[in-house]
Image (cartoon, rainbow, N blue to C red):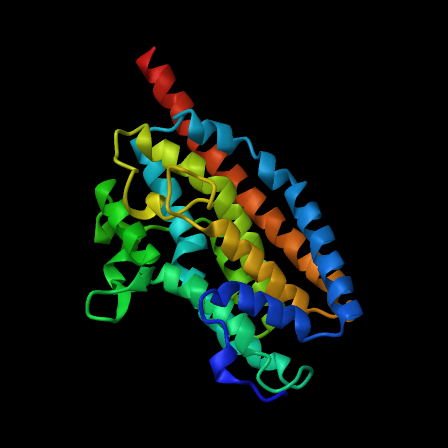
Amino acid sequence: MDEINVSQINIEDPRSQALQAMAASLPTNTWNENAEFVSSLKEKIKSHSLGNNKIIEALSDGKFGHEQVEKIHLEYRHAIVQIFTDALLMAQFQTRQLEPRLAPGEKMAPRVLLTLNILDEFGYTPGVSEIGYYKGHHEYSHYVLYEKLLSELGISAQDRNEHKSSDISKQVRAFLENTFNDYASIVALLAVAEEQVILFSPPLRKSVAHLNQDVTKGYYRVHGTTTDADTDGADDDHEDDLWAALAQACTKENYESITSLCLSYCDLWDEFWNHQLIEHSKKTEAREEAVS
């Protein structure tokens, strides 16, 4: 590793600096090949049926009553919300798998990107506080905000503890957890998870708004893209960073297995949302028939 002149380091934009360092950590032709693979994989994911799941419209149009929205949020909690930071922290730890293949210290650039995602998840905001320290509070962490959302929906701690998660919710959760020992697999599935969050946070937000709940603050305020004027989210940046981490981590030998892994995860999420649609549409129809 070349000696670094600390006085010449640009500390103003750690994200772009980390992305540049990751690209420079591989031979140019290898990085370009991996980046092309990742780009192709992203297109396959974007064309997956998950992106057109019928529940997106149903949630957006307020087709579900309070009880259904509660149950959907409990299912979503089990499938991804409870373990998302677990997966990020495991990915950060498993960057050590890069070291035998790359130069010493190259694991730190993706760790910086994962840290930026984790800081966001933990409730930190950019800037320096009045006392010259970090700005943030654990009460603003996304997981805590989600639990507060459940409380606002009237879901008690007992309700949460006694909720019997569906088989598909358990499968979605286990699929991600089963990658915790493999760095490339974790970052690939985390990137898919971010895409899923981008797709489904807006309709979920609308489903809650249809219940006359305030979605201008809290959990749904911090989930969205950098181009979304109604949120303070940066899920698109986080997704891009994870794809870049995959471009650094993958090799030609695992292109096929990573593709299969990501598409299988999309299949499970599609099944998860289909289950929610079928399960709760039945209750909606029964309620409408009772009223008529």
